[in-house]
Image (cartoon, rainbow, N blue to C red; front, side):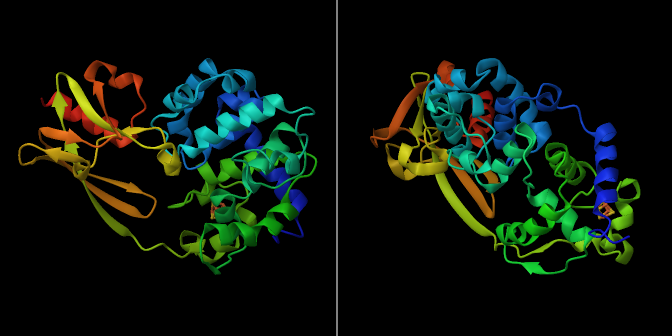
Length: 334
Ligand code: SF4
């Protein structure tokens, strides 16, 4: 069945599937503009099951725009700790402050897009889900579904190029009567059925439209050029004195990770004894594979940007996710 000449049938099948198959998520059970905004920003770069406890904790602490606007930057970061991509938390905080001050409030996609952290994807999600306005959301999930439905084997330079290429098709398929549910149904289909690896085609509600399934090419689509992996190595210092751990506070000018604490780089301390390697850890940030070597030492002098933090106060500060994990492990072994 041709997708675009039968789009009304496509929308009906997708909508009927979503009505019964959607996961019960807190922002769906109790929808509001604020909950839509928070859930959309949290869900970027993060899987739903990972973000759920964060979302619930966030709603308890910052139940609305005003509560968030009145919070300190530290409190906001603390409640985001572990989710990564911290510019989202800072943008959400700034957005709440601007939103509370605005009169009249932003009423459509274009006006929402002027607020911090709101790009084409999030503004379409807010406009369609919270305001009921027609705007198709196009993210990695939607790209994947559309590339497979249409068996589009074009090689895209990056995700942005793929999103751009599929936006017109997503707009054409959008159910203008019910844009919020339609968009959420597409995202849900991508998250639960049209999976990156091994899509569950036999239970797919729109299987009869899928050209890739017909040709057996679904596992190869979409085709997006991969960034070359970059290997990075960093030496870190592990220094404890008087039950205090020496940490580096990432400066506000640092972008993504600003305001968080991490183990200092070895080069930022002048060591009194030759450093002993006590652990080596690996992590990945997008296409960077980072190997961090942690050395125990005693210092003579430290750089200005470093701070001593009492061991029993570590829970109260915002540490970068992997560093909190590693610090816990190393303290356990002490
Ligand atoms: S049939 Fe398979 S590949 Fe096609 S849209 Fe459905 S889940 Fe995706």
